[in-house]
Image: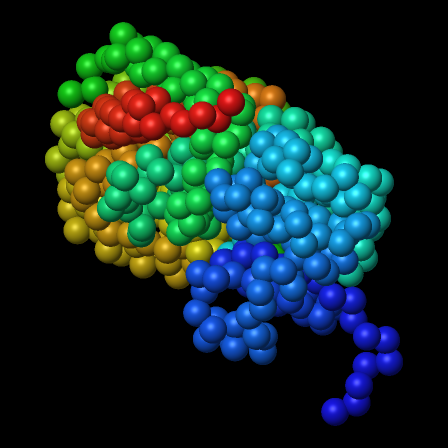
Length: 255
Length: 255
């Protein structure tokens, strides 16, 4: 086996769930991965030609990606803080950004740069590759957000959206909040027709199919950890109720 | 100009709105069209190389297609009844089937065969041709439904679904009722994000885009003339409300 001329830089990945594995698959050619996840069996690592490593080793890399549920981020930040190197770059990948950015800013030592990201895709939508998929990137501490964006664009063909945690969460509350809300109601109404369908209904059900198997942590983050989610839900239900009322009063002789 | 060896059979088309025009475009190579619609300017006919004709002439063809709104069907049936030839075949194309089938059965003379159809597509979804698009076909009187289905399959590549008016309306209440309900709520919530979107949200909005410009008559038929529509709406709002309640009680410290 020819050894590569330049050794690949080490990258620490904390969390090896569905998204951690997707990230590992695409990062492996560029980085020497140090993956830590005490809740995943060794066999899962073996499938990626990886050995699990300890938290300290993963956290000591020059770049560290946190791919754990948003709800456990504070705990993970506390655990890795003592092991981070000065000048290291820490990124997260959660579905919301206001709270995670605040948690990382408060809990990570001052010499560490922080970039918050939200890949707007999962294993389902990335099945045919990453090219053209979207990722939101927010500067939290330091000036490396633009550079991170450039790498994501160049190396993976991602559509990089530079934004702020607040602007992100406001849009995500609508985009993900509404998709999940609609999917939940439609799944609860099943069985729904599969043969006598219109193209528009097929598109809606295709969307439902993409999110219905999302991990419960993803639902939780979208519904509970996004500060704007409640407002979007409220508007949706208010408008739906108003339409319902309108329907009732207009109901004609539909026999 | 060489005259065609076999003269094309005459087909009467009553109604020259959005769907009537789509039908005319695809039927013109096979039939000699006699189109009647007193509410459409001559220029619209000219664009199809057609001259408008009187109700009597259109109704006297061996095949007559009714492409008027469901809400005016009873009136149209009354108007054409005296002019239909014995053995003629009458078809409708409305979005619901129970009421139209009953109206046609009651109002068309006994010697006339009746086939109720619902093309599950419109000008939008037929932009790239008819092949593979779905059409529901119901026998109402006489035994020509299967033959109609075979022609639609062979001549246009349509996916023909032989069904009954009741089975059709039950499925359509879910398929079209839910799509239109969701589209109405989302349109009312606009502006919605267009850049920072997920693939599943894009699919939902694509579906919304396909139905948002549907004629008001289509909405009306789907919501008011389908006997099962109210039940579907009720289930959707009940489930949504239950989820809303669940959300409220589970709401954690999302700050």
